[in-house]
Amino acid sequence: MASEKDTKNTGDTSYEACRDELVEVVRLLEQGGLDLDASLTLWERGELLAKRCEDYLAGARKRIEDALSTDPSDEA
Image (cartoon, rainbow, N blue to C red; front, top):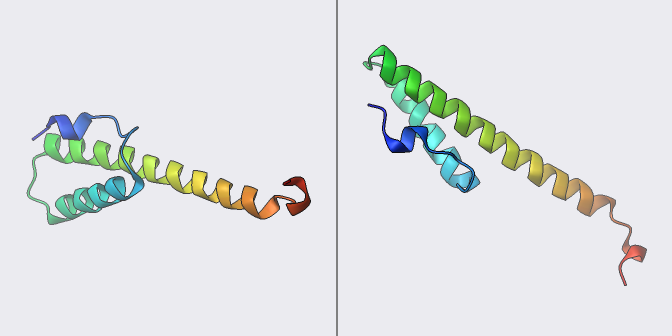
């Protein structure tokens, strides 16, 4: 069941696409009925997607914190 999509890097994938794919991975794993190799491949893909989502959210959090801490007098 391993496909190119299962192993590709998520570096250029949007947050929404990663999140949606992660939801699908979880659904497939919860559904069951997969052999061990397929389950492990999906699990690994899910871990990669979850990490990418966490990175996006950390970046968004940082941007918000930076925006809130910007002193308006610093801008000309």
